[in-house]
Image (cartoon, rainbow, N blue to C red; front, side):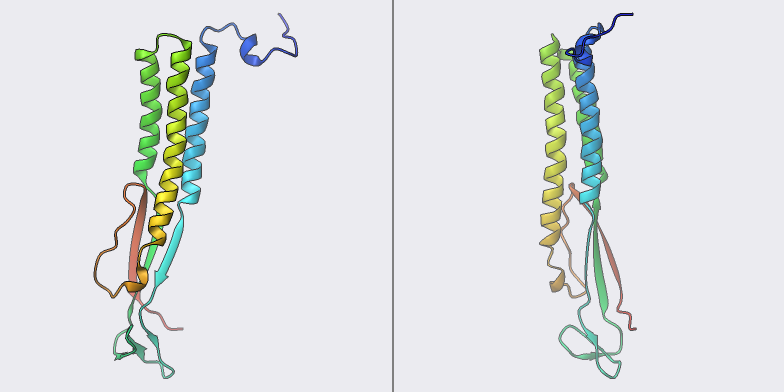
Length: 169
């Protein structure tokens, strides 16, 4: 068995042809996992609004302050990660590996394909979080009157809308 000197890196110690490409594929997989985990963590948000309220004697009021017989509807929006972003991350990784197999003519060109894919995945995750969080924050939930439409950050995020009567107590 030969021993490597301390100045040699593990990549230089390997005699496997294409070890640089394998290292970049490993890096691409790590970027995919980190991007998916970061995207999932930073894509959780929630906000809610109840137009109206309860008077001192326990009666319900609507958003204009008028007495009503029924409890006003409250709206709750929850932002989640979109499955489409996870599919895009996987598609970018698989297409990069396919491009390396089909089009790369040498090690530097293969490394370029893999590096570009890693950068695209990282950019996709960051841009998706920023667009979704900003868009979610800008949803005019306080203008909601029980009707109408909210526009969600599709395909960057998934929003769940829940309405329920105001609870007292």
